[in-house]
Length: 234
Ligand code: ADP
Ligand code: MG
Image (cartoon, rainbow, N blue to C red; front, top):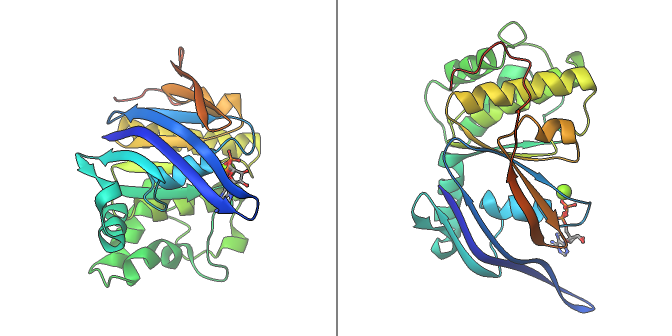
């Protein structure tokens, strides 16, 4: 599904070239739930932006579902992103004074999709917020806001969900709620990549990757995967 080969990312700075990712090889199969960990500045978000087709690598090859995305035009890349990938961020990125329903619907408003209200409602029901459609972000808890953001990420039914520190701004209870939701989505078939600083969050995943100074230092399966769900219907 996701295959990175020799991915290098450098930026030109006043002081010269700065290389952030030093040749990343990574294969993620459908149905995996991968945690990416590592100290601040190790290149996690840079890697996530490349995985999400938000940014292009300097060199290397990225095969997404059999397509070499490094060869796509900006327009083709945006389409691949819209069809296949949903994003979730630490800061929710919701529009204030705008209902949950409208926030979730917005990605579809730009391309004028039909039936978008019904789709947005279904996505909010899927994350357990069917009774909060008209609430604005300030009327929701942190965990609920993140669930709205997850519903928005689900609106196009993406095969891949990329989450950059999705529980970084949440308390323990909301963290559990969000990780249970990701576990459910993963059990229903979504491939998920989560950047996190918390061991507890990584324990919900099937695989844990440790990044340091732009290099993968370890890549191991998670044993005794954590969940508070009764059962995972995988
Ligand atoms: P992490 O998410 O692991 O904290 P990042 O991927 O955000 O790390 O950043 C890794 C390094 O790359 C940091 O030192 C950051 O300052 C640098 N960096 C990230 N994006 C850019 C950019 N657009 N231009 C220059 N440097 C960048
Ligand atoms: Mg980051």
